[in-house]
Image (cartoon, rainbow, N blue to C red; front, side, top):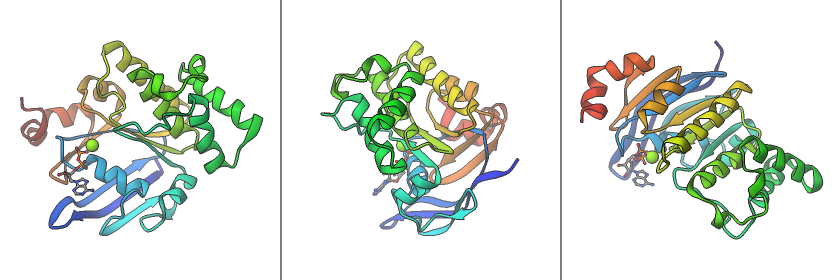
Length: 238
Ligand code: ADP
Ligand code: MG
């Protein structure tokens, strides 16, 4: 399969601390990839480097045929990279609908009635249509997580990176978010899912990559990765 994303030899340091060390990762178009690893292993930093929130120190990041590692975040968004945030960042005083209309206008140049229709259609797909008119501060945790994904979808991405969208959710809510990610993937969107809930990672991912201390220690099928001794030691051990 054709690679939509190719990360090669990416290193990122903060002062003297190396958060990512020579990370290489290729993601196929349409793939469902799970990204796991202990807290502090560099998962969010990697996503920040891919999305443009941070600039990598060295290495290259190619997306859909473009070298993007020196491009601004908004340019990468326009090329089709979208991410949800580990800590949701809604516009709290705006309605759910307005939260989607901002990226629709900003990224797609869609405004007015058409933006409203598109926003409603995205919310409908997330089971959030009934909440379109409430302010985001009134949403439950799972609704907020869904709105984060909806906002990412408003940019019409080719690649969606979900950073712990299931954190803090109960069993049935985890399944709701999982179902949404499966549906988006079925529509052709490549998905990288960062998640600690192993059951969700195992059922969702076609391939799993495990980071530890800024390095990829395992890349393979979900079954191979959970059985890997290094992954057991670094992450799954206890
Ligand atoms: P994960 O998402 O796997 O939990 P992170 O990528 O958030 O890990 O963090 C990896 C390491 O980099 C951690 O030690 C964290 O403290 C450090 N780090 C992340 N972002 C910054 C930053 N902006 N400045 C300094 N250190 C950071
Ligand atoms: Mg993180």
